[in-house]
Structure formats: C-alpha cells, structure tokens
Image 1 (cartoon, helix red, strand yellow):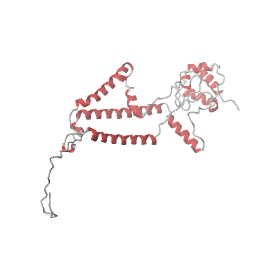
Image 2 (tube, helix red, strand yellow; image 1 turned 90 degrees about the horizontal axis):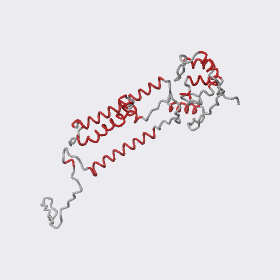
Image 3 (cartoon, one colour; image 1 turned 90 degrees about the vertical axis):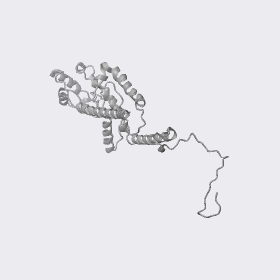
Image 4 (cartoon, one colour; image 1 turned 135 degrees about the vertical axis):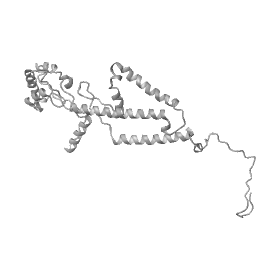
Length: 290
C-alpha cells in the first residue's frame, strides 16, 4: 500500500486471506527447469511431433505430385522376358528375399522368422533402453538398432538396383516407362497424339498357321517369349505376326542363327535346314494388302 506519488515511497503489498492460492495440477511445470528430464507428453511433445509429421507429409505429397508414378504396360503372364521390379521403397525387401538363406528351403525363415526378430527387437527397444539420456551416443542400444537398420536398407536398395540394371543390360532391354517416354517424345515432336497403353496396337493375323514350321517354333520354345499366338508383348517382345514386313528373309536367318537384342541364338539348337524352313515361313508373315 502506498500514499502519494513519491518515487522513493515504500510500497507494501497486502494479501487477502480470503483469496485462495490457485493450484492447476493439469498444467505441468516448465521442463527446462529440470535438466535431463523430459517434457510433458500432452501437449508439448505431441504438438511438436504433430508439426514434424505435417512437414514430412507435405514434403512427401509435393514429391509425389512432382514425380509421377511410372506406369507400365498391362500385365502379360506369357511374357517370360519381363523383369519385375517393385517400387523403390520395397527394393531392400526385394533384394533380401533373393538370398538363399531366406528363400527356397528357408522361405519360412525369411518371410516369418527374420521379420519376427526385427519387429521383436523394435518392440523390446523401449524396455532394453530405459535411460533418460537424449544424446544418441549415450544410448548405445537404440542408436545401434537405428544405424544397423538404416545401413542395411540403404545397402540392400543399392545392390538391388545395381543387379536390376545389369539384368537390363544383359538382355538388352529397356524399362517400359522409358519406352513410353521415348514414344511420347517422338509423337510430340511429330505433332501427334501420345500413344496410350489402353489402346493396344493393331495386330496382324498369323499366315498359314498349320505350316510344319510351327513344329519348329514349338521345338525352339519361341512361345515362351512370343506367346502361343506369336503376338509377343510389344515393345519388349515384338510380335512374329507381321514380322515379314519388318525383316527380310536374310535378316530373319541372321536373327534366328546368331540372336538379336534379347533374343538368344538358335544355331546350336536348330539345324540349318530347320532355320531355313522356319525363316521362310516367318518371311510370309505379312499384313494383308489393303
């Protein structure tokens, strides 16, 4: 209590015993006052995690909008030359299941045993690492599990992609989405409409399907790649129907004998007479004149 307006006058604060001290047990104290301690889960920790989650989600959505999914051609179970490939975030698991100790006779261990150990370790981590220390180098168990998982995922992803690129080079194949992009670019330069996978290419009927050369086709197992109707799976596996319009008899002999692109050579499987009979029949495979 003060009287007057003098600056040096003593100020006395008078309390009223009828006003109770307010206690708010739901409001936690400032956790910065307790070094080494954690803050309240609600709302402090939860709010920060929610904000981080929102930032990650927005970044992920921006990425997916900027880089569209590479859509392939319709699935064809008769195409034996197609190399399946999962999305990038499953590459580590795709490579992991290739190893002999998690596949074949050990498929149960690879698909159930190893994942059970991994998820079990993740569930036990909070019980094994009960310290209140936040610095990662003083939390050996949690930090070791985190770095081991991260290194394993990165390593398996890189190895999987490297193996895939080598397979594509060995078979002289081009990924479907690259073929689609190249065709769309060529169509754009010519002022044409981009080709669509929903509109299949017009196929040509097989000429003289009862010719004895069909027995050679079956012997050489051409149907494994070119399908039973020999329509293939363009653009990876070209159709044999209409091949006479694209290749001459001499080019067909060279292709069947020594191979071409992803097609193997048949000089060790077929005799010269069989190759001549087969290529003569293939040279007849032309579109009817309109």
